[in-house]
Image (cartoon, rainbow, N blue to C red; front, side, top):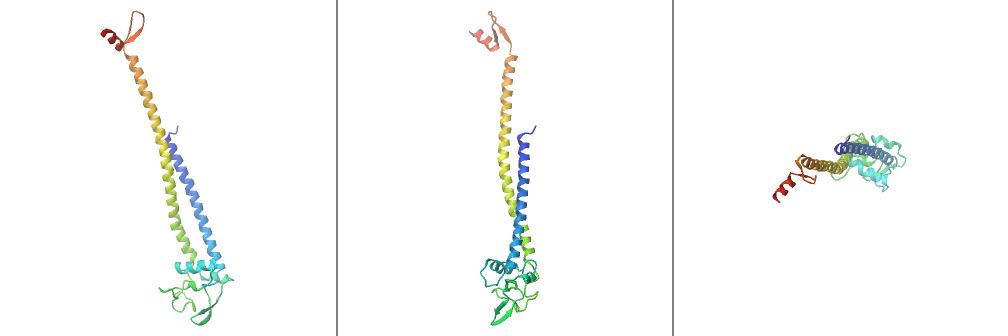
Length: 213
């Protein structure tokens, strides 16, 4: 027989497992979608001055995360929308990579002749954004998921514990009531009984009362 506390434990554990699987699946979907969005942004990138959503996203993300492309700067080789003709310091140049792939100083100016000449020292062309973003998602995404899971678990445990305590308390109260009832009946049955002249049965208390009367 399973008592309320045991039922609470099983219910709590099952809910946690279900919630964990759901959150874990959600994290997978978020990760997959994030990589897809990143790849689409690279494929549809236009320029640092463009206001389209893809260009705007990479113009913000790549300098902030110090990265270039999905896996590296060569990802932009396949981009058909990338506008490579660019005016920089009064001269027209052909961009090998997007300007946001450059390393920037505190004034948000490209370092050491970038974007005229991209290299590993003045740019992030060898560092892809996806490995960095995936690490962030794995770290902080799971933290958020575990916090949510903990809140769910706490609520479930509190509710089921309350139900269990109520159930146990009800059982205890019923047992006490039955015990008291049995004790009273037993005490009555154990008292000496007397018979009056009419054959009526009475106990010690009745006998004392009759003697006093």
